[in-house]
Image (cartoon, rainbow, N blue to C red; front, side, top):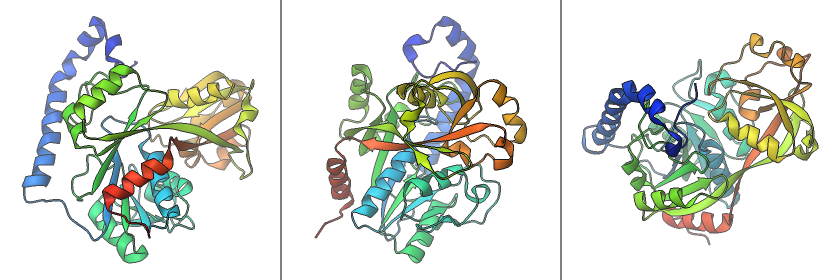
Length: 355
């Protein structure tokens, strides 16, 4: 079943009748989100303030807006400018691990994906030189990052709905293809919080192709004081699943390939492949953060000679499962328009002064 989240204008009466039973759960979800924010702002559990500047990179919608690669980009860019940076992530769907686990010390991976989650490994690969600290308690992770690495700036991956740690800047990513969906709360729509929550954003990244006028107008109305910049996902490398040699992904032109993914928006991988000139002839798609098993890859070779997956998926696929499959990993990085201007604005808002 396809969810009528991506484009509210395409939601017909049949969709509305189908999703009507979810109206009450959506109301309850919204009430819970508002209460959680109120409790952290005015109740006993006030946000913890730590001795470092805190930059949150998050989203208003569930999954697929480019939050994690954007967090990696901005953390590495600040590090390259001479700032001591650490990335903090909650380690969603990790199967084991301590209260605080170091995924990377900035030089090498320090824990398996099962201990830190697939997104922590992705952050470590995309933000070389930046330590990655994993904990559901962001304040505890922040203190560990400051103590171990002397972090001056902490970048929270997927932190917009996390109110336990006080932040100095909220950056929100919006995918231009799906926008804000049908503007309804989960599970009725894709929103994690009511639309008005976008007003908390200091900076908004419009990720993807040029946003249409309706989305731009909606974002301007909801967050009139936020600055905006454009970014897009750029395929940068291609490698064999069991190898390290990377080649230009443009070699995929005119190749017939299969698509293997367990991400929030597999259509973004398809779009990247088609933009490279590849012809997608088969797909095997799973839910976001899927935990792969050997059986998930059976009979792939019969459907396509070459299969393409993401870096996020590749770390969860055992080499023994793909011995008879030509599985390749497409590396994608975030490309930001006018990056120096964006970084100057971020540093100014964080109070970072260059000598």
